[in-house]
Length: 617
Image (cartoon, rainbow, N blue to C red; front, side, top):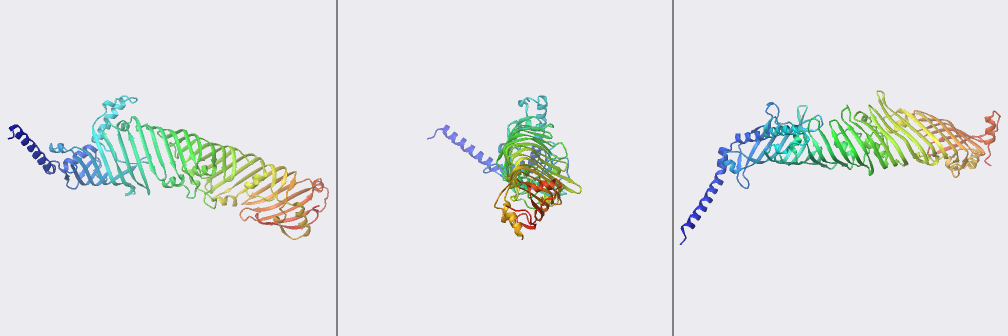
């Protein structure tokens, strides 16, 4: 027979089970009568600092978690009743404390916003941020923390920070909108993530994903001292942004005070800088050929200025090092600095940072000189090896400058074609249109190598010489620069040879009469003592004032015009024996010379004899 002690224990256990069951069964009833809609709204208002309104009646669920499900919830500013809500949510799920509910209190640690709409404003920095609450526990905690930070900015007493609980806020399938012209414009869609901040004096994290301008983005932010950050103090901060067009990360310290700054290591990479700028709606020329870029740098940022030290940059797989300075205090951002490369593709570099390079494949693409209205640029460059299309350069020193409608790229010194070159490309936006200036000075170069790079293969002086080119004129497209340019071309060459000219065969054809193609007499080379060329250019047409080549026996000369646009030739020329040429120079009458006319095009020139008087033997 059971003892009285055992029977009392069984009764006690049974009574406890019944009480617990009655409590669980009564929770929805208790919640529906005591945790009323206004009580939840008041607690959420005290927690967030916004005026919270709940249109639908709360629905209480006990299993698997004790929670309240709210519908048609809005969070608005207390001070502006006419403004639209800062946050609207179709549904909010709040995890409640059962014991607190039995006491008539509302205590929750997690809130889930389902399909929320968050209204944001564009700040002076360009960022979109929601309105800041004027009260609530969060605002009061920040005010208290600000006093702690101000008491000792270098080393605030963290034990004096508020320890109020915050919890976790989750959001699913939300969106951000901004008012533009009185209408809501969607900034971000498919917004999903959560912010976790157990207590005000603890660490906090934010993770979110969404779709911005058609691309999926992911953001992760974390700080062990978020309250110090919000209070204007200095605290560690890590940030990671990922999207298909670009990725960015920061790991260092930051301050969000009036004199805000960031100090740490930053990394940025993009498979196509052109795609990034188009995605960011920077307004670049659609034809600009901009390749991959990656940057890793020590960053120090203060209000209006960012310094990049020990910067490692890779542009189209061309690695370089240097330092950059970004200033945001003027009307346009100002970028200045120095970069040194081992190898550098000048076309890629110019396309990435200036409008000074044509689109890939050339063509009649328009030049986007409006770039000069959006940024000021002053970069110093050096490269041990560089390429400009098919041209190979070494020991390059260059500058790129963009300011007030003026875009300039200068190569002050470089080795190429066995000699030295200097060049300048300049775009100047004026009321009457963009003016272009191109200058090139190539000294002590191999004429054959230079001509091959320029696409000229016939009657080219092969030897050491100097070439100067100056072109000026309007430029709307790349082709129109050369079609409309004015300027001059001069060249002098020392001893060498004239390529692709069989002079005896040439003279024989002129003696026989009848026109013939220059290709018919291109199977030889003529040794020369020197050559000189002078030409003036007007509206894309070169007028050859002097073109002479002197050999031991002959002097060859040309004059006339050559068109860049139509590639047409209209030249006259002659071949004179060297001794007779000297006699003519001294005023004596010489024998007849072999004179001829050159017509056709650059690619298919033909010769038509005018007179015959010089033997090829």
